[in-house]
Length: 432
Ligand code: EPU
Image (cartoon, rainbow, N blue to C red; front, side, top):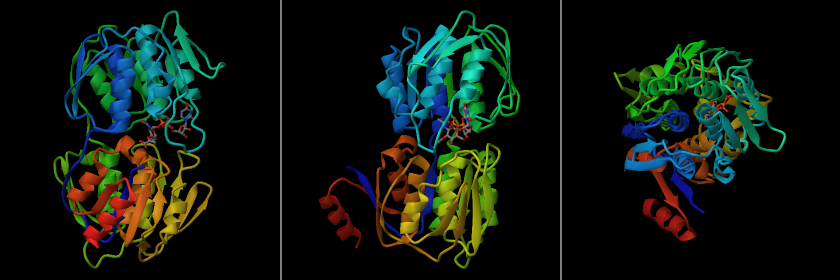
């Protein structure tokens, strides 16, 4: 089984190019189902979740052609099924968007419950509420989710909680529904705006994405076109914290600094230097800086992203004093703390709060990635630790980060993908 071997201690230095956004990609790929014609998607991240989604589309009879590593042509004209294969869709959360997209295309869907990272219960009641408001009947009684509508038509959807997934599903279903849909208390994440921009580019009429209220005038006339996915806010934030935690100096290219403002603000508060260019950000730490303790709450955008909570906790574990981190979105997103503790961190979790007493250093250990973002965070911990670490279960990391270890190597990290004990000995010998 593949794992990452890391020797900590190197300060990351140099430039890294950020890939397209995973969570925009997994919304835009099913949105292609609403379009009859060719959609050319550029800046598509080369990650496992995207490859899986393309397989799902192919299984539904879409024509999928890679132009290069990050550009794909998708033509869903011949798609003739609204029953994607459960063995594929159960592996990822984003597969839930097939419900909205297939409802919009066929007024019908039959899907298995979606998979994805395990942060406790992840209900879909708000998705179902949105579909019902648009006139669909939903049946979840057989262990699968079935939806059908005689006449999918616009309506007023008010979400009880701010939810990215249900906002996206409501947008997908409403895009081709008859009449006007208004979504209130909508999520405002950059990938919501990116999905709206993609759909508008293909002929949809969606206004207000990025605010609390999204208004959609349904139309069936969507046409093909070319669209470039935004850079990944979370990949960028992960590299910002990698630079900070290793006390390095890194320039991130192909980013939208506005999407990174809250991450930058928190890092500056902790004593990290940040300067912004038009589409780049430089992150560096002065030699004599000791990180200051800070508090934050993971919240919906524009708050501090829950998907950055494990990474910044790793950096705060090396700060002076006590930091308090509160997770307000998911009920169980601190599973990685046990692994970090084995590396010497001093963190106590009480319910949805982590109390972090900074230590002067981490020590290398054999650890496992519990999920995607926590896996990346543990790699950052390993890079800032003394000695060797191995990180298992990297399949989680590969779901969402393009060329993660190669990009880190490019910045001077001592990190290798290894498969066997022989690889491990070879690498340890190579770098001493
Ligand atoms: N919620 C409900 N009912 C629903 C839907 C959500 O109560 O019907 C609750 C959830 O339990 C949670 C909160 O609402 O407490 C927010 O969940 P949301 O729906 O926003 O999350 P999601 O759509 O399941 C997406 C991302 C996650 C990211 C969250 C929050 C994708 C594919 N996934 O999940 O990304 O953490 O939004 O920003 O876009 C990741 O990329 O590693 C990842 C986990």
